[in-house]
Length: 238
Image (cartoon, rainbow, N blue to C red; front, side, top):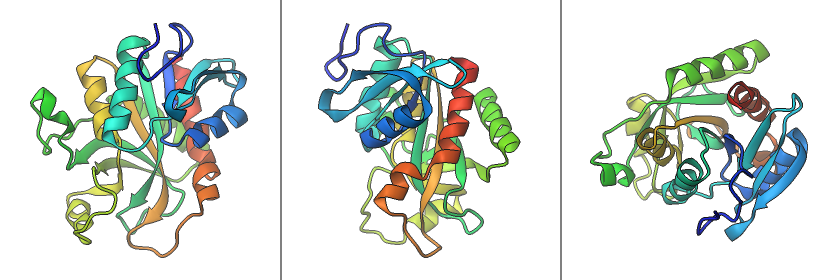
């Protein structure tokens, strides 16, 4: 039965979902990496497509919107109402570390945050949820086999994009954060609470230590290495 935020019928969403933030990126993934695709949700402009990979594995791709509250809603409904087993977030991030370059792929093994999202379950912002170790290992294997530059470790999931404390990022970098994004904490909390699995894979599109910034077009379509790897990972669990 549809939810307040998703018009898909039961069975129209696959067991494994790739979840970018941007609806246009979800469409780009469906158009370029899947076949026999069906649009199953467009409520509030958050597209969900279900289709087959080149190896004929059935997966879905759905946008989450921006921030913990948004992905918190969509991931909860996917896990709890549509029987999704695994969500792989495929997003963008800003790197904090000098050894990480633009377009490198990051695996979020553990998530740091300043968010209060976990308070509903008794967690404070010092709690750092981890991804399932077997899925992390599988993601590393795919990236290594493909020869794509990647890094694995902690990611900082922020609640504020335009932070008035301009140097606050240095504190998280010093604590080992590879990069910053805005969704993974809520995703990992929901997965843990509902007995599901989640993994964040990110492409570096911004950098706090290096000059340059990707164009909107590059942000939407310059993520090929990550998407190819995430789809191959998804096929293992589809």
